[in-house]
Image (cartoon, rainbow, N blue to C red):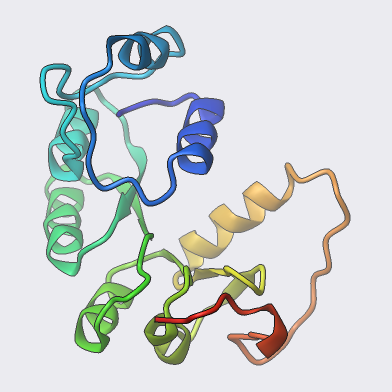
Amino acid sequence: MITDNPELVQGMGALMSGLIETEPIPEIISGIESRGGIVLDKEKASIDQVGGLRKACALGYKNIAVSVVSPEEAGKLRLIEKENDINLILIGAHLTGIECREAGELINKMDIITGCASKTVRLKIHPLLQAGTSVPMFALTQKGKELILERAKEIDSPILVSTADLPLLPEHKQPRPLR
């Protein structure tokens, strides 16, 4: 899905966490389109970040965020970023159970990464900013840090801003089991 509607992005991300496979449901496709979203593949509803980024570039978008689960895909997206001279933010998500080598490769390509229930991510991460402690989101680059801070401006409840050695992962708040 391609959209510049922040409510659609937030709704999809919050309601469909961990999504790895889809099927075309006409009512869902219609709902996405009625909210300004573009469905890349209406026939199969496939998940295709590379195709989505190429389409977004063709549509003239210059500031684009894409969620990613593999370092190989992240590498392809970074090449498209250079080819098209865009501002790309890569967000690593759904990483529970990720292997050590793969986690390291992914961390090196991300702007933001979620901790999910990943022991490996928590051990390897050296973030510039951390949001949350039980299922934290980590900013790894300056533009990732700025995006998280922009999102924080929209939160109505009180926010604590402090400096600390990161990651800060209180034992009693971590998901069980970490994998």
